[in-house]
Length: 170
Image (cartoon, rainbow, N blue to C red):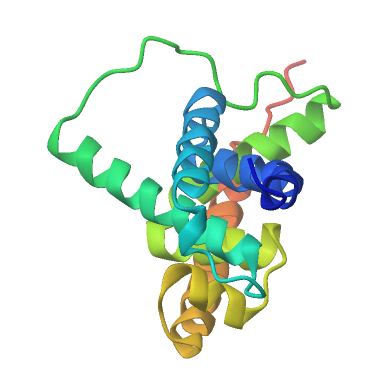
């Protein structure tokens, strides 16, 4: 173990939050974080001192997630756990429902737009940091973010308007 392990440990809550938002499933997120940390610690010699450790870890996580999504597309499987991802939240019912709707809408946003939305919106990375993590130009980050926000807004608005009005029965 090196002194850099402490810096990696500080990033675990951020990694878990991003993984949970990417996967929508607590167990899959924990597995993704574990895979990320295992790969990072095994390849710590590749990290350049003085560079952004958080961006390096998020890049590793993003690449692992993309590989897992591709593998699942080739070899689909059914999950044994039918528990919803937001089941464990301890919020008021209206907050829980709004969060569930947001998570549902976010899951329907295309993967490349969702990744940018999560990095910039949730993880508060700059456009440049997100571009490094995703290995795309800054302009692409900006356009994906704009399209992703628009898509998310449209999905949430449709969800709110889709509810049928209650009938008053006398």
